[in-house]
Length: 67
Image (cartoon, rainbow, N blue to C red; front, side, top):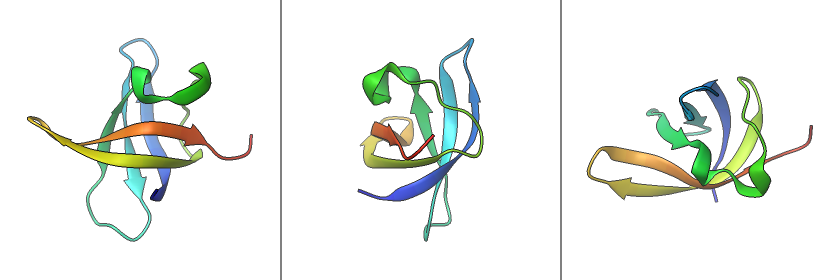
């Protein structure tokens, strides 16, 4: 599972972006991909899987590290 940082997250729309450490490109993320119904905020460190779909790379099984 890659480690990354939440760049931004729009709670109203339920979408955002994660910057994986060690990779150049960010991945998109949706609220349904976040485990334990936590709310993502910019700057949070997260563990996640990277999946490929028709729109490109997206984060899945996102887990927030720490508080």
